[in-house]
Length: 502
Image (tube, rainbow, N blue to C red):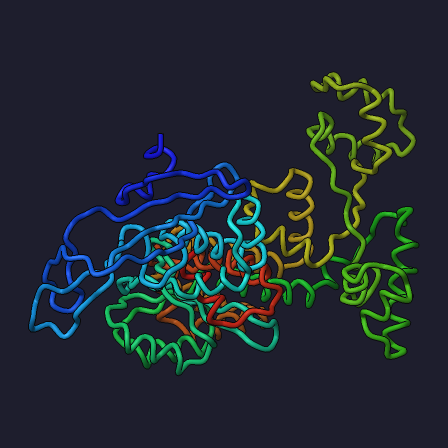
C-alpha cells in the first residue's frame, strides 16, 4: 500500500506514515548502502553522524505530505581527500539544500508555465500544496530552457509587448512548429546577431518587414527568404479596395432601390458622428456623447458618405431563385401583373414552392432589377472570394457590377490570376502577371506590383515553396494568451521562459 501511495519515495526506506490531521507525515531514512564522496568518488560506509531533512512532497487526498528524512554524514575513506566528511544525497528524491521533492517541484513548474504565479499558487492550495506565488515564479525561472537544434527552416514574426511601443520577435521551426527562441525587440541587428550565432538556417519565412529582410541578408546570407503568402494576399486586397473606391462612380451610379426603413437612421447617425468630428472631438468622446459603442462610431467615421454604409440584404437561397429572371421580365412587361398569374406561370416552369413564399420574395424586392449597391469592403470581399463560394444572388450582383465598370472587370481578372499563382505555387509565372498588371490602367495595382518587385526573390520563393508564416501566427495567438494572463506587469525574462517552456 505504501509503495502504491508513495511511488516517488521508492528509493527510501519508509518506516512510518503518521496522520497529523491537516497533513500526512512520512518518516523515512536512506538505505544502509555505501555512499560516494562528492570530491574523490571513493565509496564509504562509515557513518559519522545523522541529520534530519524536512521535505514537502506531492499531496495525498487533498492533504499536504511532509517527509521527515534521516540522512547520514559519512567519513571519506580516502586519506588523501581534502573532504573528511560529507552528507549523502538522494538525487532520485530531491536536490541539495532543497525543501521540496523533485516531483513536487516539477508540478509547481508545470503549473507556473500554464497559470503563472498567483493562479498557480491558488491551484496548488486547492490540491493541498501550500506554495506562495513568489515561490511559483522562482521555481519557474530556475527551470533550464532545453537546448534545441537550429532548424533548417525558420519562421520569424513580431508580437507586441506593449502595443504601439514595444515589440519582441518570436522564432519557431516552420516544419515542426517548435518554438526556438524569443528576442527582446524586432531590430535588424538583434536578429542578425542571433542568426550569426546559430548557424545552419537554410530557409527563413517572414512577412514584408524590411528590418527582418535586412537582418537575414546580414546574419544568414546563404538562407532563402520566403515571403508569407497571406501577407501577399492581404496587400493585394488593399490595392483592390483602393481601386474599388476610385471607381465607385461607375458601379454605384445608376438607378437604385428606393429608401429602406433603416436608410434614414443611417444618414442621421452618419451626420451626427461627422458633426462631432468636425468640432474637434475624438472617437472616444463621440462614443461617450452619443452613447454608442466605439466600434460603431469608428464604422460611421470611416465612411465618407452615408450611402457607403447601406448594406444589401443578405438572403438565403429559395425555391423562387431559378425563376427570378422570368419574374423580372414579366413585371417589366406588365407592371401590374397579379401574383396569382405569376404563380401559375412559374408552376408550369417547375416551381414547387408555396404562394406565400412567392409573395414574400416579391415584397422583399428580390425580383426587382434595382438593387442596393454594396459597400466597397463588401465588393472587395466578393472580388477576393472564389466565385463558386459566393451565394447565387451575390454572384449575379457581382456580374452586374463588373459589367458596369470595365476597370473592375479587368481587376477581377487579375485577382483571379494571382489567386491561381498563389494556390498553384506557380512562382515562375509571376513576372508575366506583373507585366500584364503594369499594362492595365489600375494605379493601385501598380503600387502593389512595385512592392512585389522590391522583394521579388522572396515573393517568388513564397509562391513556389511550401513554407509559410501560418504556424507562427498561431504561436503568436498563444503568446498573446500567456502575455495577457500576466496583465502586462511581468518582465520579458518571465514571458520568454513561459513561451519556450509551454
